[in-house]
Structures are given as C-alpha cells and as structure tokens.
Length: 232
Image (cartoon, rainbow, N blue to C red; front, side, top):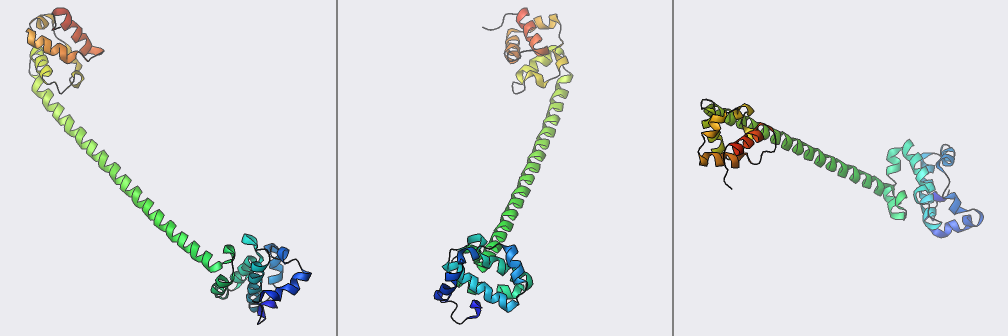
C-alpha cells in the first residue's frame, strides 16, 4: 500500500498510478463507497490509507469538503479515536485542504464552542442585568406611585374641611396640580358662591381651569366665565 511506502511522500510515487486511474475522481468517492472498503481494513491499513489519500488530495484535484481522506479518517475515528487523533499533526503538516486538516478543525470547533459558551454567558448576564433593571424600575415606579398616593391623600384631607369656595381658591393656588388631580365632585358650587369670588381669585381659577377641554372642570370654567368678567 502506498501509505506504507518509505517514499510515499514523494509526489512522483502517484504518477504511475495516475496514468491508469482518475485520481481526481477517486478523491471524490462518496463516503458510503469507502465504508465498504474500510470495513475490511485493519487500523494500520486505515492509517496508511489516510496518509496516502492526504498526499493524493494535495497533488491531484483537491477534494475540498468531500475529499476521500475525510471519509476514511472518520471511519478510523469511529473505530479508534485515539489512533485517528494521533494522525492530526502529521495531516496538518501535509495537507493544504482546510476540511481535511482534522486537528485544526477540531481546535477550531473547540474554540468556536468556547466562544459560544462565552457569548451565551454574556447574553445570560445581560439578560439578568436587564431583568434586574426592569425590576428596579418597577419597584421605583411603585414606590413613587405609593408616595404620590400618600401625598394626594394628605392634600385632599387638608382641603376636605374647607367650604367649596375656599377649597377652589386653595386648589387654584396649588398650580403644580392640575384640576383633574382633585375629585370632580368638588366642582359642585352654587351660583352665589361663584359670585362671591373676588376678581383676583376668579382670574386665578379661570387661568387654572383654562387647559380643560371637557368634563366637570370645563363646565366649572364656563360657569366662572359666565358669572364674571375674566382678565383679558
């Protein structure tokens, strides 16, 4: 067998074989065909065949990802992994075909796997950080809402005891709070109370209610405009 020859690395060893065989076609024989051949060979025969096919792949029409040496190597690896892997350095120094550089491809796959693990770990960490930020924002929003509810209850409690007219004046002075911040029923005020507003309080209320476009507060705005003359 050529792979066992002392001179098999000499490319001229294949020349006589090439004159009688299409080595380019031989280098692209499908794996199923090689299975029948390798089944009858010993591990030593397969090692020799891998070496011979590696040299043939380099010299005669490289087979790329379907080179015959790949199928034979895989058969040897399935039978004797350690023996197959012991060829990796030799093949690496004798092949120009990336797909047949088994050691390099295995290292590449290991590196790719390691990179994938790092990427997955980074994604997991980013996901945990995103979830933590979301929980933090939700907690902060809940805390703000609770604080706002307490503040509103306090303000409404302070205004509850006032008369409707006094309450509206105080509400207008709290310009930081829009009308809809307060209960709609507080718009229930008599015409007499509307007429009792001094000009300053009336104008303050009209300016405060001006942004309202509908609802109880808009109707109160219209009543104030009807019962007095607003500041132009």
